[in-house]
Image (cartoon, rainbow, N blue to C red; front, side):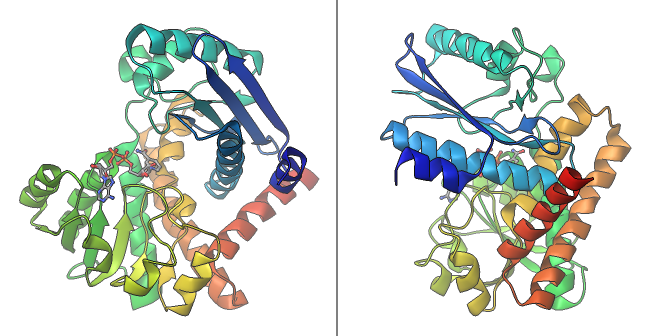
Length: 352
Ligand code: NAI
C-alpha cells in the first residue's frame, strides 16, 4: 500500500514525521482526531523493521485512541506518538532524546497531548514536561497523578462484572472462575479486587515468581504462561501483551467471555467475528481498559477528585453493557458495536 493509500485509509487529521539526527530515530505523531478535544495518547518507543512499519503502527494506534477516548466520554480526541529508535536508549542518550521529543510535542501547540506507553515511563514524561505542558503521566513527585495501573484494574473489574451480568445473568462474582494472563501493574491489582469479590482465580505470568507472589496473596492457582489461554474459566482477562486472540488461539480458548486490560487483544479485526462464532463474548479492550486514560485525564487535566474518578471508572460497566447489548440487538460483533458507539459520539459532537 502506498503512503497515500495508508493515509487515506487512516482518515486522520495530521501525521507529523521528524528525523532525529541525534539518535537516528524517527519521531512520528499521529493526530487522528481533535473533534472531541486535543488528540491524546501515549508515546511508544521501540525499534521497528522500517519507517513504514512505524507509520502503520502510529496510524493504527492513534485511531484506536480516538475510539477509546470517545467511548470513555472524555473531552479528548485520539493521537499517538511512536519513537522508532535503532535501540531503546538509556541514561544521557535517553534524556537527550526525550528533550528533543518534547520540542516536537511543544511545536504541536496542544493539538497532541502525550503520555506513557510501551517503553516510556513516568521519568520520561517528567523530562518531556520540562518544555511543554501537553503531557500526562508525570511522576507524583513532579506533579503527576502516579501510576494508572490500579485505576485501570478497577475499570477492568467493572467491565468483568458487566460481562458476567450479560453472559450469566448475574454480576455476582462469588464462585466465578477468572483467568488472568499477566499479573503486572494492572493484573496484580485486578487479582486482589476479584479475590475480594469472591472469584476463583487462575493466574499466569512469564515471570513465574510474580505469578506465585500474587497467588499467595489472593489464593489464586497458578498455571504456566503457555496454559492460561486454554484454562477452563468463565472469563479470561488478558493483562499482558496484545495480539493474544488470534485465528490460532481462538479454537483453543477455555473461556466463555473475554474482558481484560491489554491493548489490541485481537490479532486481526476478523477475530471478533471468529469469537462470536465460537460463542465467546468479547468485551472490546478499549472499552474495558479506559481506566488508564480516565485516571490521567481526570486527575491531571479535568480536576476530578477521587470520587469523580471512581464514578467514571464505574461507568465502564454501563459502557460495556451498552456495547454488548447493541451487538446482540443488531446482530453485529461487539467490536463493531463499540466502534459504532464511539463514532456516534464523535459525529454528534461534530454536528452539535
Ligand atoms: P506490566 O508490564 O506492569 O505487566 C505486564 C505483565 O505481563 C508482566 O508481569 C509481564 O511479565 C507479563 N507478561 C508479558 N507477556 C506475557 C505472556 N505472554 N504471558 C503471561 N504474562 C506475560 O503492564 P501493565 O501496566 O500491567 O499493563 C498490562 C496491559 O494492559 C498492557 O498490554 C498495557 O498496554 C495495557 N494497559 C495498561 C494500562 C495501565 O494503566 N497500566 C492502561 C491501558 C492498557
